[in-house]
Length: 201
Image (cartoon, rainbow, N blue to C red; front, side, top):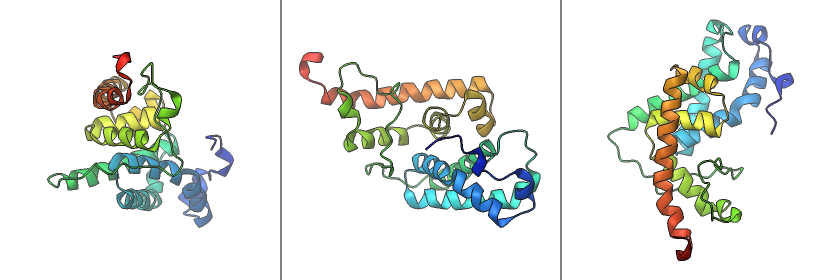
């Protein structure tokens, strides 16, 4: 799953000519990452699929306006995050259940910096139930902090790229990221303390 797949990504001129083959390659190159981000933002597979579809429809319709000042992937992330945030705003007022943990097909585990309790066995981090607890914790973050955390710590964008996606300053991004990490530690510490042997405490 290498990021170095530039040879698969169509050139901008072909995209702006609305060549179908170019857009098919664009979708192939980026759909997994966009879907994964939307799924973790929204906690719902159907909503994530809707965001994925809308992202590429909007990219197709607005590619003429893309000037290449940022990476194409950054632009796609921005569209996807905006779509996800719109869906989240529509949901407000409805109680959404976060009891059912979101699990990704690739069984991805969150970054170690979030789950670095000293005495927890490595294999514990791989458990389905642990992944679900982490994903539930992510769903408790504010929309803004969740987006910052997912882009930077899960998708691995640089601070500059994540700030570009969210259209905020790098310092604002760092503040959101710090708040997200602290909130996740607090949310997860109870879960992990229940799993620790008494003698550790």
